[in-house]
Amino acid sequence: DEFGVLLVQTDAELAAVKAAELAAAIAARSCRWQGQEIALSIAHGIYTFTGQEHVGDALEAADQAMYERKRQQRAARGQ
View: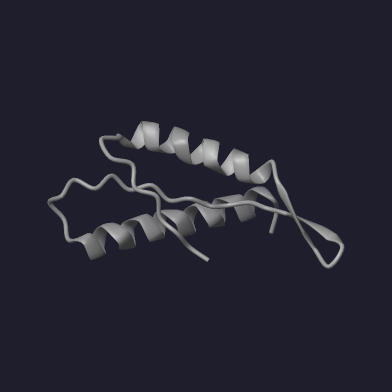
């Protein structure tokens, strides 16, 4: 599933810090399903919305950033 987090009055640098903190908090937990522990992780995409662009374009840019992050994470794991 995908979800979005909007951070008002936040630049890309602070957004990256907050996204990393959220990712670490999620990774620190696990999920038990049918007696098995499942590791949790997220991939995030960051886009700084200026208000000058169409909302759909901003969402698409954030989505593409998230998919790029997923590719980077898979490459780092050798997948």
